Amino acid sequence: MILLMKRAMAQLIDFVLGILMLFLIFGFVLPWIQSLIPNDIIRTLIGMFLIGLLYFFIQYPFMKNGQTIGKGFYRLKIVSTDKFRKDISVAVVFQREILCKLMSCYFICIPLLAAKVGGHEEATYTKIVQV
Image (cartoon, rainbow, N blue to C red; front, side, top):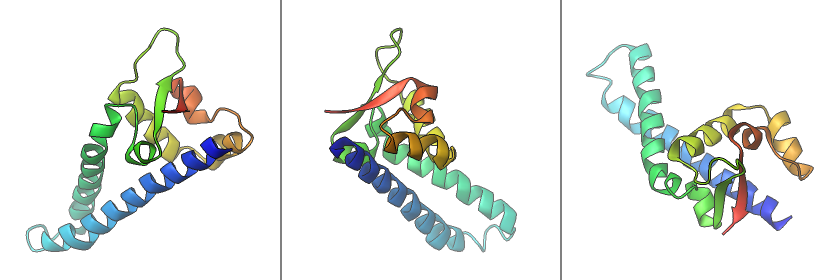
């Protein structure tokens, strides 16, 4: 149960980080470039690209260690459950985090509350362990 709480809090930290990036880009950067690029659609696309880029570069040092910022704070690590792949690459961590955030709560939250593997864990052959 403690691991489940740590996982939830780690996910909350990563979620708040994403919200802060939305606020930073759409609140400060895009209004600053409004005079340079008057088209709202192009500015929105640039904003979305910058959010993804900034989020990836902030998380990258943690992803190299099989973590995110939230998982690093709670000393959790993503490990492989695939017997053919021992190490977790940045691409696998990124895929896992994207799947975790984009899949429905039915596939992720409900299995975790029942102490079963979530859809994002089955898709990437990973699990979370306490370091």
